[in-house]
Image (cartoon, rainbow, N blue to C red; front, top):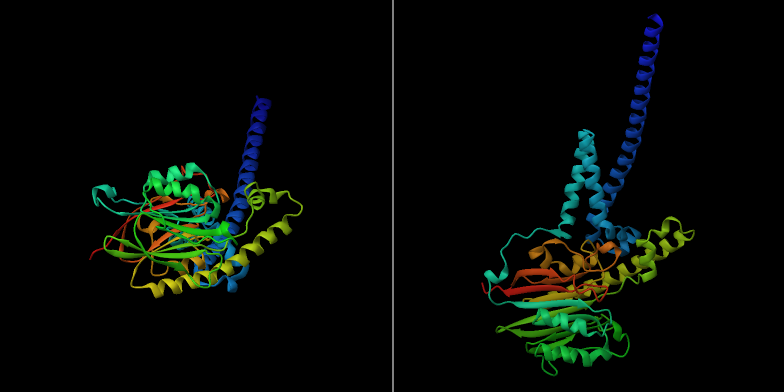
Length: 381
């Protein structure tokens, strides 16, 4: 009996010892995870602050730091995950600190994600001005023509319009009842692949280019609509010059194993910074033109090649309404790349417009961009 009791006693001690080892292993694991989460908290806190200050500072001043805002959606999601972790760990002081940065980041997140509760526009306004902005990536395809025709827009702003595709777009004009010479043809022999075009089935009173912006990348037209004159500005700002190989390098996580990753990452970053600075100068010119155009009714649209947390966007959008923020729903992205996280195509309007709807047509995936479609109504009051 004693032996049996001894056996039982020793078995109990072994079990207790095993529990202690498991508890120690679990505590050690949680400690390591806590350290990782603290590091993530510090990193996301710094990144959130950078995202908050980037729109208000010229990229020439921020340099490489200005590129961090590209990852703003990812930064915000990681910050939310860190917050949930601290809540589950019942570490309320760290959860409170994380919550501060979640709140700060929410102001930026609102430029990417919105919830729209208003009723359908057809029930409120029978008539409206429909505008489409689309970077067609030099494509000359009939399916683009047909898809645009299905939207039946009043104004179509195209970027990267190919000059030798005129015969196809004349067919678009027939579908939309455009008449000859009722569109702005500003394509040029040099850099024609990056030129802009404005089509409309409404009368054009005046038209021209924005000075100091090369390659016909900033055009405007005064269009007569409902006895009002609307100035439409179509932009295609400086490209990021990020190639398909660069995108594959980033999206495929090849930088993890690539022996030359530091050189490639530096090359990508340097190009991003250089072109951020270039676009900032373009943005100031556009803003100056918009200010001189007031008090006209203004629509500014196009491919800005920059995110909502950029100096470029902030400069142009100042004193204008982003139609997505006014009437968008869900998460917006307009670039078919970089994990489908980036909105770089916009439509901004002056205060005389009521924004009735905003949408991005994700069924039109012919280009590396998606078209932005907005319905507007002039505020008669």
